[in-house]
Length: 261
Image (cartoon, rainbow, N blue to C red; front, side, top):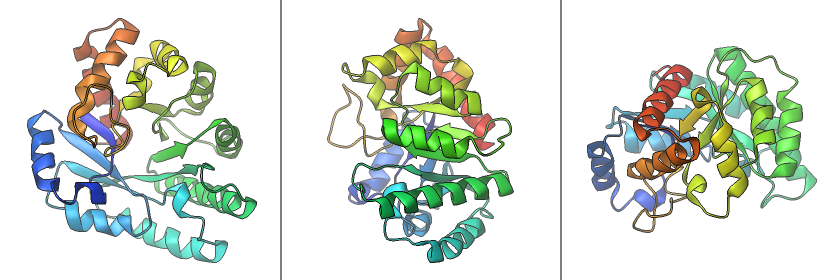
């Protein structure tokens, strides 16, 4: 199993990181993509996780972490991220996107739009896939307008933690993106997501946990980790009327293709 989106550098893992990562590996997780959140996390993750060769990195800045970043800093930040792409274990640019849940003022929104464009341009210039974080209907409309201005090649990246309906899924699929499906698909209230997953082409689905967040229904403990992937696989298989082995095998192939693992 490949987990296409994790945050094992997060402070919630500080007390039991080694124990949890051993459990995850023993559970059959062969690779994981650790996405940056803050700018500083790009460096913290390497300090904490370089000893785990099966964990790869994505270099970026989460939209909620760019509120205090102005245009004058964008060149400096992007230059630092581009240098990280030279690390052979860095496989993607991100996560980046739009998230207005906390930042509702126009200055914050404009900063997020700027950094989404700069991340996208960095990915296109270097040939790395994008990891997108797009939250909410308004953000999706704006993100699609921004992304629609660029010409993407095959397999440009993934919309992580997709939780929308099939119409929204189609809009991202039309741009070439895969969709990251995680613990949200196990929630009974997410009926539109469940219906969408049932229709998604299997070659555009990536498995993810977004751990330590978004723990699937039925997974024990307070924090999520990659050994919850079988619960996500099980629900996707149920929704698509397929065998769990088929879901796991194809999603792994998708991750290897997109991230060149």
